[in-house]
Length: 146
Image (cartoon, rainbow, N blue to C red; front, top):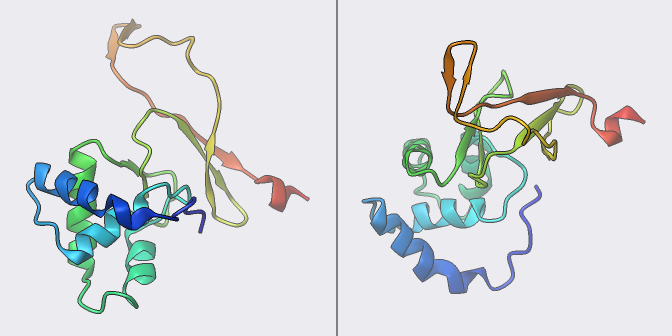
């Protein structure tokens, strides 16, 4: 999984704990591990993938804790819940609006830098008041295209 550079992440534990407290959650080792796993993660993991990755290190981790923590993070605008994959919901710790690409062969989800800035929001389009939009792309990633 593409989790970015995690050197020195233990220094961030107090910051992550404070974030959880702001969201009304106790800073348990399980929740801290979920936040730490998501930080800098570009693999767009599902709740099940997060659970599978962390469970060996945290035997007391439950799926309910993963789902509950992700739901609070989603409501607080800390993660995006992606529905690009028809098999499972995925989560993106980058809450800024951007597009995604799902490779139909390998199943990986990528950030796709497509400039859609010509559409300024909010906007009235044919009588519809559009505040946000998402555009998902599907096809073959560079590795699978070869």
